[in-house]
Length: 177
Image (cartoon, rainbow, N blue to C red; front, side):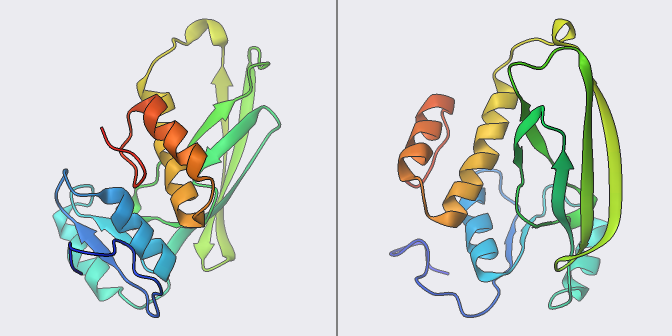
């Protein structure tokens, strides 16, 4: 694909798999191209080199993916909220607890499979005590970046995209540093 001209092709008729091994590349755009076309994004810096051949041999076959998360009423804004491939065995899930949550146990169930068919379910209980936590900047920024990725996929909420970019110093197609 060219680096000059239209950044996102109008219509993608075939799945595009994007690969990256540069920390300075536009990972968000590469993920966007892949997801919009039905393909996958592979960050080779996060995948052990011995798994590269396995990934290449699986091109065109159904991909094992995270399908959904079921969580209790104390949790909101869980990302990813859409099916996402589990490339190299890595998956990062983040969410936000409601401000009203006191000391408690948070339950989350993760569903995995192929396409939309759930084949594996994992249940977790997480202990939460607000007195043991500290406010920080990195986790809210990470959550914002995951939210931004999904906004880009839906091509909606441009104002929200700009707001997230400015608030958390994230580069978006609508903002810059």
